[in-house]
Structures are given as structure tokens and as C-alpha cells.
Amino acid sequence: MLETLGLDAEAEAVYRRMLAEPQAGVAALAAGLGLAEERVRGGLDRLSALALVQPSDREGIGFRAVGPEAAMELLLARQQAELAAQQLRVEASRAAAAQLIAECSALRPTAAGPGAEQLSGPAEIRERLAELADAARLEVATFAPGGAHTEEDLRASRRPNAALLERGVRMRTVYLDSVRNHRPTLEHVTWLHRSGGQVRTVPALPVRMILFDRELAVLPIDTEDARAGAVVLRGAGTVAALYALFEGVWEGAVPIGEGPAPGADGMSPQELTVLKLLALGHTDETIAKRLGVSPRTARRLAATLMERLDARSRFEAGVHAVQDGWLPATR
Image (tube, rainbow, N blue to C red; front, side):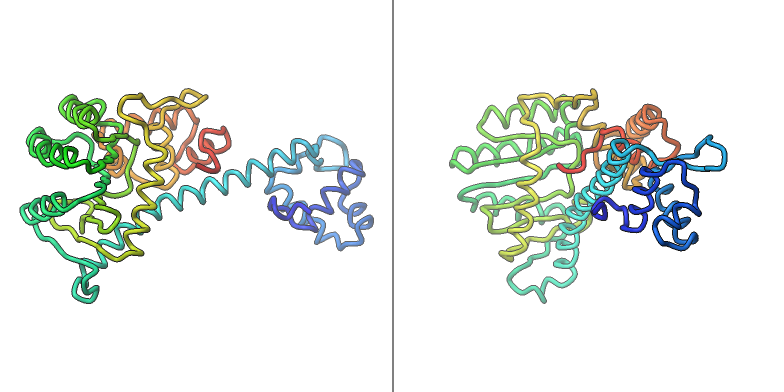
């Protein structure tokens, strides 16, 4: 009955018998259930691992069953933690899948035929992006990770962005929350918003990419150095999958005219993202890159959260966050 909550039938039978006969020892439980004492002890071990039995101070009985209400809360909390961990793995896999698509297409562009085009170096990338933007008819959707952008890059992007908007092309861009703290970048995204572009921010982005008219996508070959090279993808299935990734992130992003709202426990979206990355085992350096902040800021955020959670390790911080309700089981 409780197998969906992680409790097997035999352990459940032992637990129910303990509730019915709280004074019974192993021998009495075994006799009442018609099981060998060894199997009853195995059931008790599994119940103990789930925290459904606790030490007892009654003479002759070394354990007692936790009440059914508390037991169900424990089982549900454990299941929620497992679901949350799975959700974190799914979110990490989205980014890995997008990057794998880019890397594989770059490694075998000729094998992909007309479905992939490889670009080398920043000059070739800029030139091809300009051509694609000029040809865009409906929409340009962009993930722009990396945090603060240089003023030179921001100035260079204004003219083509303005031209797109003047032609009635819809522009949707997702930046990192950290750009809100960098004045030149914030001024640019504010200008883009006022000019008719739709701009939102999130704590972290899975990959840098630009999508044109739901027909093609441009991704970097190397996430560590987006200027080194890129790949243009046209496969319908691939582009559809990347658009699904974009839409999922866009839906949860915060419009630039609004501020990221803290949760009920006072935790900001950025802190929640740090918790997720800690639970996945990321280092301070990789967290800093994902958030677009300095390694020093990432270390401070991680240390503060671990202190609040009374955690001795990053994985323990993630477990405590789920148990305390800071990490939800679903998005």
C-alpha cells in the first residue's frame, strides 16, 4: 500500500504490527506476523533507515514506532526530496543537451548536410549573425548569459536591434539577474525594453543561444569561450527542442520592469539557484559563471546559505533545503 512512498510491503507489515502491539519485541512481532525473526529485523532496519522507528526507553523493548501522522510526513518529505533531486538533474540535462547538439554538429557539419553550418572566430560569427538578423521576419529569441556586457558590445548591438524592431520583428531576450547591478548593461536592456523589445531576467541560463523565426538556432561550440566558434542549426526537430527550452525559461523569467520577488521564506531567486547548483555539486567558480558574478560573490552566497541551513557540505545544503521547503519538488 505504501510502496509508492518507498516502504516495502514487509516493512509496512512490521510497522503496522508495532502500532497495534507497541509492547511487542522482535520475537512477538515475528510470531504475530508469521515471519522469521531475521526478516523482522530486516524490516526494522529499513524502517529505521526511513526514521519510522526510534529508540525506546521501555525495558526489554529497544524501539518504538513513530505515530502514523508523523510517519506519513516523513515518507512524503523523503519522496519530495527525491523528486526535487530529479528535477535538478532534469534542469541540468537541458543545458547539457543543448550544448551537446552544438558540439556534435560542429564536429560533423558535413555529415549533418544542410542542417548545420560551422562558424569560426568572432568576426565570422558577428557577420553571420548580422545576415541572419537582416533576414529575420517574425522573431529573434535570445539567451544572453555572461552577466555584465562590455559597453563596446552594447553600443554595437543597438543599431541592429533598432532595425529589427522598426521592421516589426518580435525580440525576446533573457539576461541574467546580475545585469540589474551593472549600470551600462541595465541602461541598455532598459533602452531595449522601451524600444519595444521584450526583456526578462533569470538567476542562471543553461546556454548562450539565438533563435531566428523558429527555423534556425545559433549556439557556441565552447561554452567557456563563445567567441571561439559557433554552429548554425536548421534541423526542425533540433530547433523545436531548443525553442521548448527557451519557452520554459522565458515563462519563469522576470520582466525587466519588475524586480525578482523573494519567496515566502525571504529567499531570492538567485539564492534559490545557488542552492540548486550546490546540490548538484558545482564549484564556486562554475556558480559564478552561471550567475554572471565574481567568484568572490559566489563564495559569499554559498557560505551564507550553508550557514543558514547549518550544512557541512554542499550536498547536505541541498538536502536540508528540500527538507526545510526551500527547494520545491516541481517547478
